Length: 460
Image (cartoon, rainbow, N blue to C red):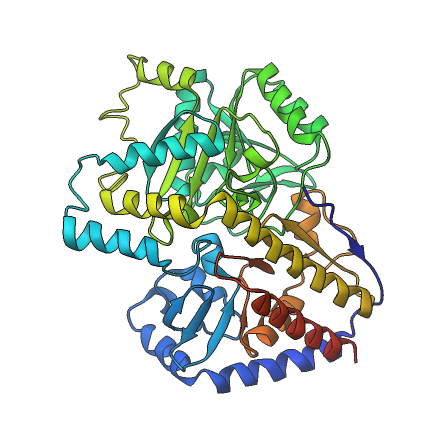
């Protein structure tokens, strides 16, 4: 794994920052009138004026409206084109509409038909075998999202262990799984701020510790009531937080000793390589969950478990996973999603392509570090394979709590607006940049140029 470099230096003039944010907001509004009009009209019937409320998180007061997207570029309703480093927050890691995936989807839907029949296709066995090759677990099943994959991994773990609780890491991200909206607070565990309509206090269902804190993990697992340790091998949705040397091996050992199953959620950490962190770092989880990126933009999720666990759950007379258990859903494992996933894994997100994507991320990281060093900025950038992210703190955070404390919404808005106003798109939730197979050196260098200009104006 990469060893992040720290670049430290002078602080930021907040009055200057506010002036720049105001300027960039005006520029954004002036440059996207059709998107603004579409957003205002949509409010009559769309909750929050958008198809999904998190789309309001784009900076500038309203989101861009999509016209077209191909490869690593995107064009909005106003005809503005962008180098897209957001890529659907990893959902389009394969690039937008890779031709081989598009052809597989068209053939399955238009020529072969039957995308929703509740019948299996031969493609599903191929995809399961490929996921087993990449990640290790031998037996796989499909959902329509990583959220559902995590939900079913948790239910299987509870059934197999007879234990009620799960353990997660503060500020982790596992989709909208109810049990995971819990963080470590100054007075102990608490529901994460903004948790909507929690069915129960998450302390009833979940234990939580800080990432990289082995003592806390050992203490919580000692209670003997944890069915599964659900973890990202590196935190990703609170900035990238990498594991300390030896940490993940110790987590594996503690989970085994306590009788808890270990679940690696590779939905975002798939960027580490063709088998995610599990393969890149030689990890040995009991279950792996996946989503988003393996379908080339078509909704899919998957969870895999070892042969031993598969035999146990299938042979459990008290676990009716065929019917009452309700694992999956009518559209889970549908022929269209599976066809898209096979095409993407077989021809797009291959081992060789990942090497090129990571090389682009190396170039991206090096460019940002040069800018930070030149400006003596107290920021860092951390890389996880094909993705990289800068954080506004002098040292790379070691825990989710540290990374959350480093959040700076004003700086976030400035950098996002500055970039988008000059044709570069980052992930709106954080300063994440992802490389796709279609990302080029020129795309990376354009970001470096814009980032340098943004830093220069901030420091001038």
